Image (cartoon, rainbow, N blue to C red):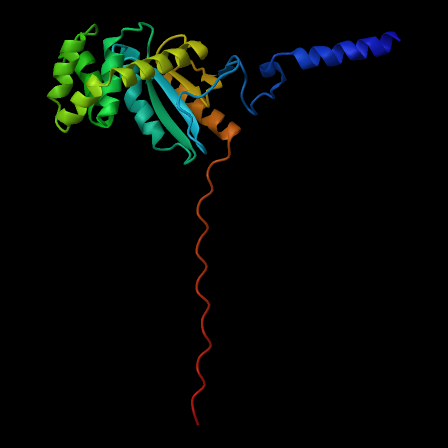
Length: 233
């Protein structure tokens, strides 16, 4: 009787155990060393068929400025089924840099301005680390390639800006982001590392562990040769 009761107790305990405790460890990786599993984690902006790699960053962060070119280089070698998404840190819900990032995103100007904002803050001192919305607006407005009408439209779309800010802050809190830069894969794995290189190496290992790389397209078979026509007699 006791054996039956013990078995029932163990089954009930297993059923009530946290989901992350029941999830198998990633092969070749150590939880707590290479990554932290995020309980009830979800991607920031999920896209069907893609594994999201989200970087939480701040333009005011010197570590992010050093990490940005390394991440950009690493991005080129990501599997085809992975997608890098930038998430401005929202430790301060009124962060001016985050707001202007979302405006630039709405104006499709992030690719044109991302590296430049880091340089303006950390190299040329064109922008202070505590830049105001007015200072940042003036900076973005004079960058080559930025569409003034699209930028103004995105700046005036307060509902979208508030929704994006809320989503970024919720993602950051749900993922328990400890600081910047941080990488979160598939909304479930907070990447750990003791250097920029180890952080990116672990990110690559996690991507490999959770999803097979996209298969290369099959080589086209050569067309079958038609038999030569027989000469007429």
